[in-house]
Length: 293
Picture (cartoon, rainbow, N blue to C red):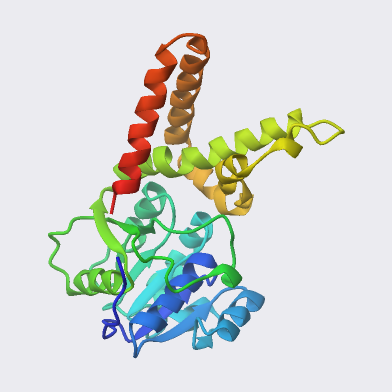
């Protein structure tokens, strides 16, 4: 799905976190929603790079300065850091503003946000998760088209009658994303299977290859594109995944159990024709995945 230029539904945006996701979201806003003014807040070196890259118009010295006067506050930080920001955001945000996050798990942060944003006279919070990204991190890898053609999970219901939410959904579509509504528990279970499990499986495979490689460089020296493609996620840094594992432990443990069962099944059928049915099922799933919009 191609993004289309649109009038910005929000005029002043506070970008809390200017790495890959926050930087890409800011670049997408500047490309597809003219008229928006973006204030960035992050570590001084990180936000300076975001200004230099043209992702944000200005850098705020404090979190309070960043959110003050913003009608959209976008939190693109690791989960624990995002949670730590909520009290300050509630204290300084406009009551009319919309606050959202881009964290990869939703149960913990949405529970904390519900506690902070319970008062009807404060800003509105909605949990979000862009299903977009890559194994790299930092503003240097940010791109305005990162969200084009990608699903964007929102926690809540599409039937909510809130102009702020309607504007945010319009904004997501303007930058090329496809909003999908769900609840926090369902999101974390699903993400555990289709996002977090592949990451851990890639890490485990990398460990096996590393440990099996001897002083001659074998078997790694015989690796081709297949291994490189399979291990792409292994290039993702631990600091990105630490809080994900800590806040989705039960779902991840279950997902790893299911993977272990599947591997045991393959081992059992290595020498018989039942292995063919596993390949057929895998081929079908791969084809279905490629056909998804």
